[in-house]
Amino acid sequence: MTCARDPLSVQRYKPVLIVLHGEHSTSGRIGRLLRELGAPLDIRRPRFGDPLPRHLGDHSGAVFFGGPMSANDEEDWLKREIDWLAAPLKENKPFLGICLGAQLLARQLGQKVDAHPEGKVEVGYYPIHPTEHGHCLCDSPFPTRVYQWHREGFDCPKGAVLLAEGEDFQAQAIKVGDKAFGLQFHPDVTYEMICRWTITSLDRIDHPGVQSRQRHIDGWFQHDRSIARWTVEFLKRWLGAPEFDGRIAPAE
Image (tube, rainbow, N blue to C red):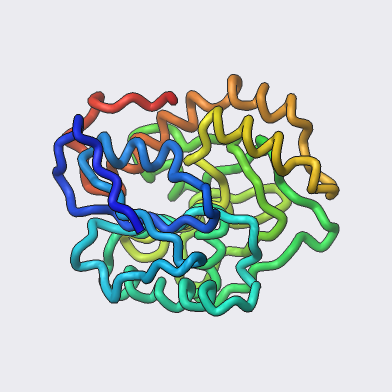
């Protein structure tokens, strides 16, 4: 486990717990923006033996990222992650689940995570539809076309608030309590990550709905600026940092 500190930034917050599920995966745009806001990153990979903290008293919050595995897999480390998510919910600490992380949150709340009944997947840029709650979430408009890479999804769990819904997978963004969020899409993705994923993994997927590599690249230039602006404002709200308006750059 590592705690990444940027010597050029001023630490204003306790570290944010970053949970990654690939040996070489990164926190992407999310990690960069958190560091610029003044939150160091405590990076852990439970899949490869890193422990999770017993509580979040030493952290500002936690972000669980995506991964190639299913939220329904039976590995002990994955079950421990699902069980651990009771901690930020009980402590009312900021939590953000992205893709797999959102699905793990849904499972912690008792909601099923399933493949699409027609075998469809979302791999590329797809439209989503913000609800009234989603439109009111932060000061930047909720994005209406976002980057996706998943073959399973979930409906809005009982007790959660639906912030955005999709056409093939219902729950695209949810809120639980005041500070926990799950996003089925990937606001963390950078151009470098898209280039890498579409070279190393796209040819492994043969399901209805997969977009070509060129559509991924084109989608970045068409849609990422609005996603990036929203991500900045969302993270400031999530971390409780409204005073830093205009001090961090959305693009990467």
